[in-house]
Image (spheres, rainbow, N blue to C red):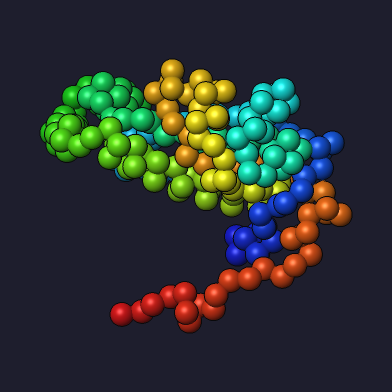
Amino acid sequence: MSLIEDLNWRHAVKAYDPTKKVSEEDLNKILESARLAPTSSGLQPFRVIVVENQELKEKMIRGALNPEVMRDCSHVLVFAAWDSYSDEKIDKVYDLHTDVRDLPRGRFSSYTDKIKELYGAQTPEEHFAHTARQTYIALGLAMAQAAELKIDTTPAEGFSNEVVDEILELGELGLKSVSLLYIGYKDAENDWLSHMKKVRISMEEFVIRK
């Protein structure tokens, strides 16, 4: 199938079959698609936390607006962004860039000095607003990869960030949760959206040409 066909196939699943689990091979493909997502300055200022332990999911349910979906899906992917930028984080990423490309460390210092100055003038709140936006590109690619594999997904912002951050101890990692992606296989009998037509505005309304 083409990507367009895959995207027409997928929908935000409302009920999962708890007996069906995503294979490790397919899970890794979804995670790899997120890892390969483009990010501002190539900094990859977020991480994806994979929650598959059922007891942990049960603890997270108290912060979810759709607890049955969280409970019954195969895995919960938590997209969590850096809570702030720092010179050390930027240097670590660019040391990786130069090491992988067999270049001397500091090769990109003229550029990294500029972004350090830029972020240094901003607040931690502004930092997180920027890093959080980066996660959505990876989220979209993960959903597209899952659709190609015929794995169902439900993206979610309807949850308590405080509860998820506390349970997963994200603060200790310098991270804050942004969004969730439930993955698994739908319970077609109870997924009320499963048999409904996909609804989107027309291309003529959606695209504004100048």
